[in-house]
Image: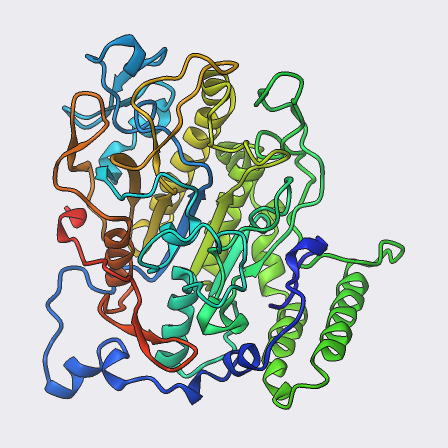
Length: 495
C-alpha cells in the first residue's frame, strides 16, 4: 500500500512475494476476455439492451460506519408503540405516500430524486465492512481489522478501477480512479484501521488513494458515554481547514510541496529496505509513478481544495468534515475520478459514529441526522444543478440496521445491531426517482416484501457503471471469483 497519510497505524508491515506479484502483476493471473465489459456482446454483434447499463460515469459512495437506524431515517413506523417508534416521528416527503424520519426535513424535499430500499437483509448483525462493500460470501470477524489478510476480497471501488484499467489500457490515468476521504477507517479512534476499503486480492496497486485530515474539530459532539465528549470535525471544522493529499513526517519544513516530496521519499526508502530481498521489486514502480504524477500534475490537489468553491456553496454543504468531504467528492468526479468514497467513521471512540448503543437520541438529534440531512441533500441538488446527477451514482451504505425495540438502560437509550431488516438510500446514475423498494413488518424488524441483499446493491451498482455483475476477478492462485459473490442485478432499484 502506498502510504498517503501521516498516521503510522495505516501502514502494513512486511510485503510478501505474493503481494508484489499482485501489485501491477495481475497479468500473470490472466483475465478471460468474456470478463471485459461488453466484449462478448461486441464479438457476437449484439447491442446491449440491459436497462441503463453503463449510464453512471462515476460513483460517490457514502459509507456510514456503525449503521444508522431504519426507524429514525427511512422506515419510520408512526403507528408502532413507543418502545418501537421512540421519541422521533415521521414527516411527509415531496412524494405522496412516502414518509421519512422527522429530523431529515431537507432530504424529505428531494425524495423525488431518490430511491429508498427498506427491505435490505442479511444474517450478520456485526460490523462487517468487508461484507458490506465487497463480494465476500459471509462476515469473517477475524479479518475485519486486518486489511492485508489473504482472505480479503477487493472493495467495489478497487474492482471498478481494475476493470477500467483493462478497458482503457491506461494504468496511470491523470486523475486516480479510486479515492477515499477524509481519512482511513479506524485511524482516528482507539482501534486499528479497519478492513474493507482496499484492493485486497487484487494487490495494493488497487487500494484507494486516501486523504487525511489533521485539524481538531470546532464543536463538542454529543457524548457517547458520560464524561466522554470530544471535539469531532465531522460536526464542525474551520473554513480554513483542509484535507491533505499526503501526510508529512517532517513538520519543520514550511513549504507544503517540499513536505510532500520529503515524506514520499522517506516512504519509498523504507519500502525499498523492506523489499530488498524480493526479486520482483520493479512492480513497486507503479506506485512511485502514481505518487509523483499526483504531485506534479496538481489536478488532484486542486480537486480536493474545496476552499476554491464559493462560500455560499460550502455553507450549503455545511462547514463540517462530512459536508466538505461530500463537496470534495463532487469536485473529484468532475475532475475525472471514477469512484470516490466519503467515509463517516467513528472519531475518538470506536463506539462513535452511527453505532448508537448509547445516547441514541442525543447523537441522532444534535449531530448525526442534521449533518447528514444538510450535506446529502446539498450533494444531490448540486449534482443536479450541474447536470451531473443522471451520470453520477450516489450510494449510501452501512453494515446493517438497528433493533426495533429501544434499549432504555444505557445512557441516553440505544438501539443495538440488527440485520434482518434495514434501509438505505441511493440516487443518480440510473437509480429510480421518488421510489421505495420493499416493505417491512409493523415494527421494521423483518422484511415482508422483496428482500434485497447488500450483494444485490453492489451488483446493481456495477451494472449501472457498465461492468457486468457476473464478471470475475482472479484470486492469488488465479482462480476466478465472482465480483459480487451471490449478488444479482435488481432492475426494480432503477424505478
